[in-house]
Image 1 (cartoon, rainbow, N blue to C red):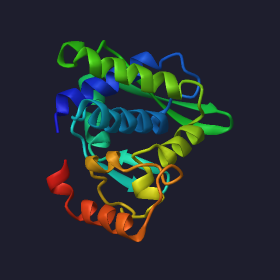
Image 2 (image 1 turned 60 degrees about the vertical axis):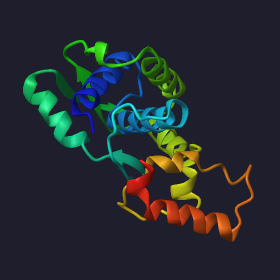
Image 3 (image 1 turned 45 degrees about the vertical axis):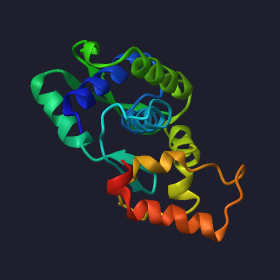
Length: 185
């Protein structure tokens, strides 16, 4: 994982979403996940290389808490606690501009597209989207990744079962891919 890119991407997303009513910690998780997995799918390489794991409410990047705490300690990020729609929101606030020189034009365009897709979604809607996102189907629909297990980037290539007939052979192949996760990332 590229910790600098992960940290700068957190700051970039927080900066771009500063005026989004529903932007908080949950949405940050979902935008990071979709950006990394879409980049893997479309650009053949994730943006940050972060490891994501499955939780009931969707994928979470493993390095989020330590990197967020590092950014707070450096004075680069703060967390604002707000009430939005009767729910507690932990809103990341970028206190400095991110270093965009470490990202390609394609990476930033992809992240901007993901941010635009999530802009008007509530945290719950963003969470539901992460459960149905094309790469996520392998983890939720097929149940090939268990709770708190790492999500292999290669599963981004698995397709929506509504558009692809899922046979026992394909289900077995998906399970084998998960077992080989170290080789498909």
